[in-house]
Length: 413
Ligand code: ADP
Image (cartoon, helix red, strand yellow):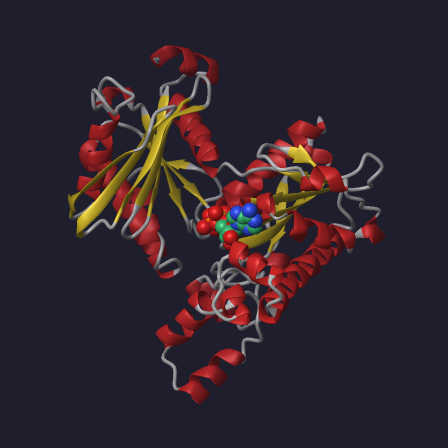
């Protein structure tokens, strides 16, 4: 069975086509600048060179049509006909309290995603447009949505409620939801698999540290707390997001600098974090480079970033009465040996010891970086959110056909 995974934003759309027999990627790519004359399709068939095309693409329906056409193109394509796309999976950022797992798209699901626009105004509209665009191009193909928030729906009220008047929760859904759920779920399950331990017996802390960053406490396979909140702004210091601040700073800044709601939102989401403290470097690689050259602001930005992450790890150790596995993933987590080393060197009170050589070894792939006698296992596990979406879509598509996973693998290819 072939599954097309779509991650649609307001003006861009990324895709990956999976063959689920081997769980391999047949092709991947993206369409950028949707809505402009200079929209660009970049398409990469597995093992072949990238194909690029600039053209007018006014909406998501046209963008999806372009993607489907290139997938069946005799020269650049990997399929013989559109009928070879058996199901489509979508990443949707916000599922609110309505979705605790992946679901098949129907009218009710679309209406619910629309209802949640208020909670994710920058993300959910793009995702719904992507769903409607697939529907317009492939009306008979089942579609499944996978929510960034779903994995965290197991958090108890003690972790998800804010200590503000009830009306905000009851009337407006103001509570902590958490994000990056597919990533936290994937790396925790992968660590259990690699350790050969049942996840139901484990206590894990997963650090998804990319441009956006969050930490999750996972007890016996369930998310019990996570650092992002009602929006992906809460928690860790990030590339350009502030993370936790005293909420009183918001009215203070609005008053002193005469900022509007949009301006204060933009200040906290786009002009804060590493970018603000380092003096203009929002990308960790640039911060590390500047630090090497002795830049003191870059050093402070890195130190704050590391310190805040370490504090969250300590908090989640307390939340779960200890933990046995620490995982680093995403751009910074997978690549910065320095960040991992500094964090782990300060967790020695937990009996955690790092295998310095393993930590510094270059090259991707899942790897254990703690020493054999460490009381906490530390892993670097590259995240693979698209694969989780493809697996969930495959499972739902097989279910509606009344097939077991095995039969579904054998049936269509
Ligand atoms: P996104 O949240 O956009 O998916 P990524 O997971 O791709 O982000 O992470 C991007 C971050 O990873 C950037 O801050 C980038 O500098 C950082 N990064 C990528 N490679 C390295 C590296 N070799 N060393 C340190 N940081 C890195």
